[in-house]
Amino acid sequence: MNPSWYRRGLVAMTVAASAALCMAGITPTSPAHAQSRAAGEPLVVSLGDSFISGEAGRWAGNSNDSADGYAHTDRAFDPATNTTDPRRVYGTSYDDACNRSDSAEVNSAPLQGPRLNLACSGATSTAILLPENGGSPFKSEPSQARQLQDAVTGKPVRAVVVSVGGNDLGFEGVITECAQNFVKPFGATPCAPTTAPEVKNRLPAMRTAAVKALADVTTAMDRAGHPKGSYRLVLQSYPSPLPDGARVRYPGEGYDRLTQGGCPFFDKDLTWAHDELVPEISTTLADAARTAGAEFLDLSRAFEGRELCSTTTAHAGPGQQPSGRTSEWVRFVTTGHGQGQRQESLHPNYYGQLALGTCLGLQLGQAPGNHSCLNNSGADPRDMRLQPAASA
Image (cartoon, rainbow, N blue to C red; front, side, top):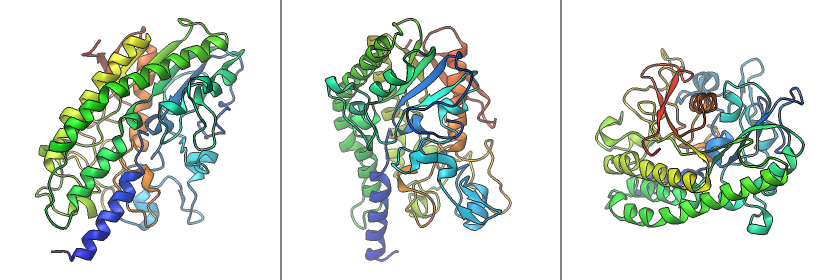
């Protein structure tokens, strides 16, 4: 049994890791600059939080092996110089922790034309709103809707895709409480029985926040000369980062879930998050999209079988190279110590970002409508598929 001081250390590290979680260019650029392409080609723009900004895109899978850039999973590592620089992946957005990665969904989508990523890790709906409606600067950057208005005035736009709601719901606090409970030295119990009703009560406010954010995006586009219907407005939900308790790779609810797998959660909490929390968030956001007149892209099951600590995935290391076919698509909970930032924890990693980009490309390749995006078992993240959304 670990001594109590060690357990307290695990609590502190896990809280720090979880507290940074946020729902939340091919080379990242400053927020108001798209990749340079032919000026007449229409833009695809992304707004919102960390799940679309590209947080954790630095990591191609997970590894506990520190050699060779963590078994070649660290895309910020240059083996020629034996140096690591996160700006190789996040560009200048690393400086204010917005963390717009080169593999962010809008960048990795198989689409023609320029892309613009205005999303920022940690953003709530307030970061999107126009200033006159309560929008305020976030991480020193102005309102995303206002940035959008300025950036697309006089330019053609194909689509605006938005990820918002998780931070308004307080997902950070939910994850923190569940992780804290797991590593308590005494009396540890699952968080789901007490947390689930509280989260359910907050869902209507999350819906309202998403509707208001989409309304201000529509207003900003109209002011920029793009009336509703002249472009596609898509609201997306969140992929489940965790499997249910029956599919976790570390049985027995021991500390190896934290120290080896980076998934410090009880079976009951894993099952609740996978089977109830993520679907409830998705259903609520689908309703917000309907109210706002936006398309809905359901990502809730996009990572099925590719989640953190899933039995059908593996860490990179000796004899196991990182691969989109075998690696987890979610960044594990990290306590730092050279393995990147804590705020990257539980976000889609490089492979996850490629998968989400494929989903977006499929969505925009179809006639406007509501779809769910799914992966194919054992296949590459570029091999995703759409089906009509159950909530359509």
